[in-house]
Length: 202
Image 1 (cartoon, helix red, strand yellow):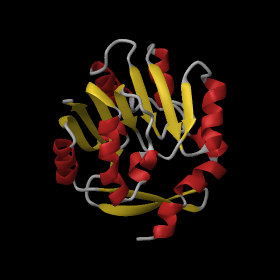
Image 2: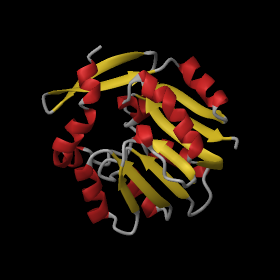
Image 3: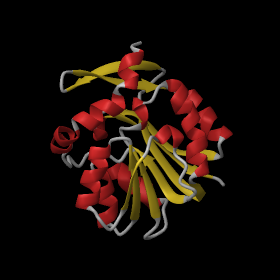
Image 4: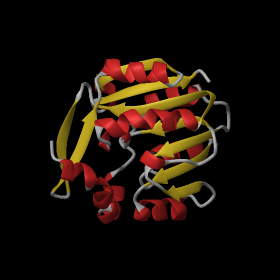
């Protein structure tokens, strides 16, 4: 598969941040999964949004429900939008692959961001999830339905996606102290997303 498209993800979202923000409307299909995620988190808990984009609709949903959000994204223009939109929260330009905040959170989410990493980088992310998770912390991310890579398009440019096999995600959960709570492949109630929800045993 095209290594160049994988390396260009950060640049793509930097250059097209405003367009992405306008397109990424709150369509509501995520709500049931966001509620499952929040059900595992203490009231007013702290959430780490990994690959937060411009903060809508995911971070906004949490903020409206009185959770504290720390959002990280590799796109500086996206983080600038977040800081203007939600100045009371914490926003940081950072590459998730090298994330080290010296903080632990009640919930970690990587919705439609984690799957832009190569498969090797996805494997390495589980140590980062573990490092930032409090005991009993919720973890939720989206992936593909099976092992492989795929190239979509955004603004006429290649948009890289990758996924591990479900059994490998489960092995990584075990290795890093997480237990699977719920997984649905290509959920028809969530625009065909494949979603993983887990909890850190800590």
